[in-house]
Length: 304
Image (tube, rainbow, N blue to C red):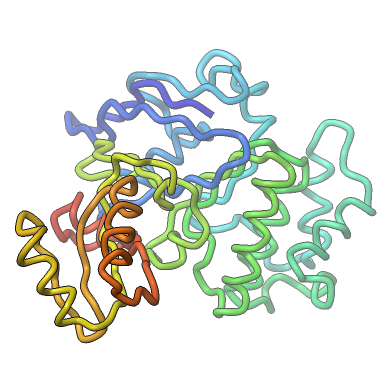
């Protein structure tokens, strides 16, 4: 899915301003931003629930503006809350939506999806008796009925307990990696987003302000990182830095020190320490948390 200069103007105000973004097959992309950043409006435009003032959205190469039916046929989505009939059972909700699709969906496929989202025991109960978490699961099953290649989920972990969140994370990662689905997900749970996402796109004031990889690439030699060295005897290490490496500024810890340096500089420093007879017990590169990245980009604005 590709967003090209997507813009939404309401009463002269730019709610979403010139957003361009690509969601690749086989990845989970997180959409983050403070309250009012334009995340949900952007998602609504992706699926045609809100018109675009400017720009376009391409899904499997089809324009949402010019070829809506072809474009949207590749998409499964939950925007805001699942739209379900509380007086019908979970199964009959899914059957109703399946019958609306060209060619329908075989019952065995419906039950297979129900099992995947772990609703088998309650699927024949009325949705009005479901908890919020169960409704989220049923909404996900509904979004997956036609086996979409693009999945868009707005706050899908709402109402889920820790076990349910873990299961959803595992399932979405499986969809992306094993079935090559492009997954776009928004959530206010930054720690969970760090576990599930490959990349994050951060919005603020309607604009896309940053797109970052969640997991630093270990092969990027130019990337600076904080590296912790567990060593002894510490007094000898301190003397080495004073005499031979005065340009470096390590932060001393009880069990060693930390330094900010590039990946390609680590082996030389390890070799230098070893040559001095210093015991090296551990070398660990600390990864910057998603929360730290988010707060740095948004300057500490509360997220939604």
